[in-house]
Amino acid sequence: MKNFIYFLFVLSLIMNFNLYADSPITSTNISSAYKNYEIVVKASDANGDLSVELLEFLLLPENPIDVKIAIINELSWDVDGKKNSLIFWRYIKEFFDYDDEQDFQKYAHADHLLCMAYLKALDNYHNVDDAIVYADLALVKNQESYTFNIIHALINAQKQMDYDWCKVYVLTNVVRTNDNLNKDMKITAVNNIFRYMDLYKDNCK
Image (cartoon, rainbow, N blue to C red):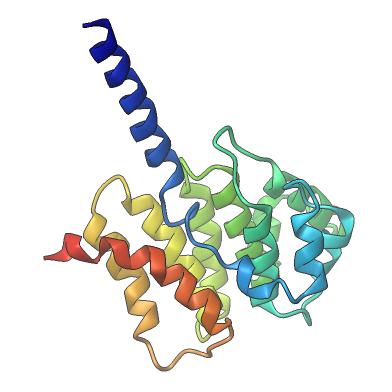
């Protein structure tokens, strides 16, 4: 009997771990497709925290948005939460002299809004409400970018994990099937995303 109870306890731990680890935000590998970029390699050596060098790369508008997203993806997530979005906010607030977050939300470059959205999602994937606000604002400013659309979809899919697993799949598949978008993300990264997201397809039957 004791062995059976112990088995149930271990099984519950495994199930809880899977609930934590398997989700659109935590299980979509984007950065591995960008390991030929030195800045992404530096992100992998940053112990999961934004450095000044990484912050400077994220702030420059001329740097490709997909590489910025790869950097943030490489910094990854932690079950206990992270604070990279706060680091990003403090740096960008001082750099651009924003009065507050409302000021930032209104005037920020689209890339900066998307970076903030993705950072917030990875910082706390249990609650992506704030991340969705930034993702929505970012998408308004750049509706043609595949990268903007897929990150927006992944964050919203994360929210739907608690409600509708079919919608989890549909949100990202709509982006995949939109031929009008500017394909500004490496196909290897896209394939990595859907290697995971396609697992939810059967929930739409």
